[in-house]
Length: 123
Image 1 (cartoon, rainbow, N blue to C red):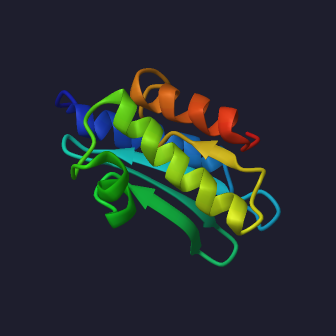
Image 2: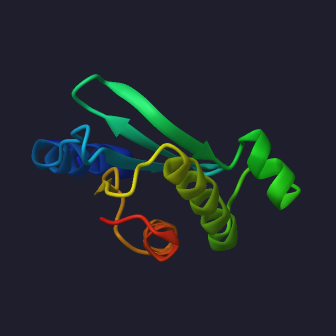
């Protein structure tokens, strides 16, 4: 068996996590993804397979807030969290299930989750 790439390892971790996590209407799933150039987050109702709220570091509102497109730093990720939480609270979403997308819970992912909790989302 060939050695798995970092991407393949993340995909396996994500599948393992998704077997356990499910976003219901009363507690939707907060899913995050980070690429080398941007950070994305969305709140999903898995019963309808429908995205309720989304925010990213390439979003127009983020560009107005940060003054640049694409978020590589932890500060940029925290701004994405502010955008997402404000949009979620507008729609009445307060409780979510956190899906780290196979990424290790550390660095940007941890900073994002901590900022969301600080701003009022319950995990």
